[in-house]
Length: 434
Ligand code: GUN
Ligand code: ZN
Image (cartoon, rainbow, N blue to C red):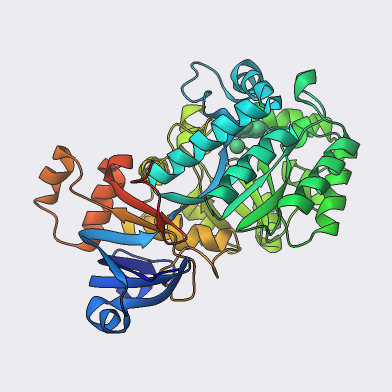
């Protein structure tokens, strides 16, 4: 494959920025370049230093735009694209009224393939290059998403949802079929291209103890795999979960009892955790996934991001859209709402920390940081190009912006897919080709 030299204002993070003036936490090159070959960044730095070694590389000049690692979305449901903007309910009614009926359609491979393609198009147009995705109970839905992601050479995490109760008949498997189908999907897709399989028991309400044992068996047989589920999103959900598992001390204790906590375990929401539950997540290295647009839309509650980060036993945190409880595909819109949730908790999240979170921070939380989330040489060339002057309102606001952190905050507060000039997956431009 030919080499490509991608030129722009490079921004990549080294560590979590502790303050808006934490200049040691990132690398910024006002005139930077990435040399890309076979989908990998082979050199990264100042244009003047990289260009002489670029041979006959084709140059793509994105100046004056910013060039960052592609965004990472740590929790989303691709079968819920037609559920976004469903009015008037909280979590359990929302699932029963809108979400479960929509998910029923994914037994049809043609429907699953159509929505999988449209979902990955939305990711490309919003600058997201990796997501941890829930499919439906139907293996066909996972087949469709993996096949489409493989065709696009994307680094994705996904799994067929395991759910064997408290849902419509058309949307339930059994403990045994959930095990068998998951096994077959792991064998077929995990490690193929850039794909990762996630063991995906939907949540304690829809999994019987027998199915939780199957999830435990799968996790024991495949300790390197991700596990994704939901935890402590809504008070009615918490109460029902405790009724269903009366022997467990609390909601987190249910997943703990089945050996599902650990460094590759991703727990969506985690809003109403007790100190004991937060300690259990921290001790096991589990990840709490912050889904602000969803938590606000469904009225679920306010995730205490700064307390979780700063407690004696800090939590690993990822940020996510949770489409379609979440209301936008954009990680910029997600962090804008995240900023407001954190503000309601009396804290502020600085813009450098925000952009760290949706790039390197999320890559670390998903244990994918050796491959994605930075612009370091040797990692995959998944990139986003951002224009802080994309709209009249942004252009006007940018007239008074003086620092990089201010520019990032404009992008987060006023930006959306219009601010995404280009998205690269494994070195190939994908947004402009939609
Ligand atoms: N809990 C169990 N399933 C879901 C889902 O699809 N969305 C959200 N937000 N919470 C859930
Ligand atoms: Zn979810």
